[in-house]
Length: 281
Image 1 (cartoon, rainbow, N blue to C red):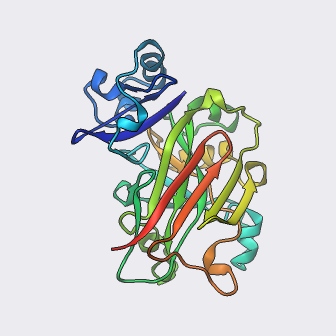
Image 2 (cartoon, one colour; image 1 turned 180 degrees about the vertical axis):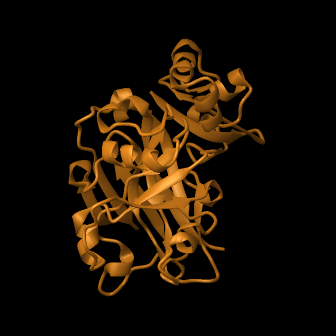
Image 3 (cartoon, rainbow, N blue to C red; image 1 turned 120 degrees about the vertical axis):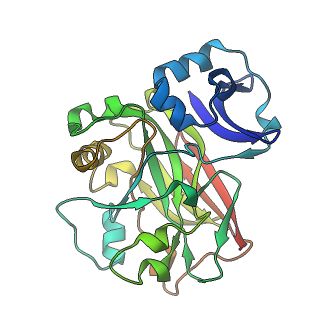
């Protein structure tokens, strides 16, 4: 099943995308956000509403996409999780995952503008796959990790590189407003096999910049869930972003940074295409 978060008629909601259109689950639950629904009623109840309800309107009738989970309690991001990216950054593999955090306010939805801030001209793309938790927990074992996953989505961890490199802490460059794109849909975990390798491709103005499969991850999705749940209790609706492959703009010769008017796409097999244009703030 596929879920979207959207705006329509000056109201925010979320729903299931079916062959007939969009089932407005938010209206049925009197909730505006998917994360809140996952925490309050759970993924199974949300899916059940999507299956048993009639569509309320066509997908073309929404006004805008929102980040597929606009209200996560936490966004935990893995850095340096593909060998090619480790090599292009001239770093060494680490024994444990590199984890940093994003804030929800930095996210946008499918077809929304990624903003190039006036403080920098070094806005870079990072195509990634996001995992959304359907069930929380602490110290989740790797062999139980998939039981905690609600679904998967495309993610673009847009990075303001000079601000990222001001110090050894990456936070500022990873949290400029309207730089983290998330969507267009959440595809539930029952649509994706546990051992299935998903193909990830990032395109800038139609040119392929990144290409990888999830079997190339240094730290697997179950490993990331187990590691993150070791130091913090994960909640339903939390997001783990799994890392970007090699080919980022900052490490090309010459570097390639996104500019006003560019179009960036992140496509993942079975998850769809996340498309955003770049606009000077």
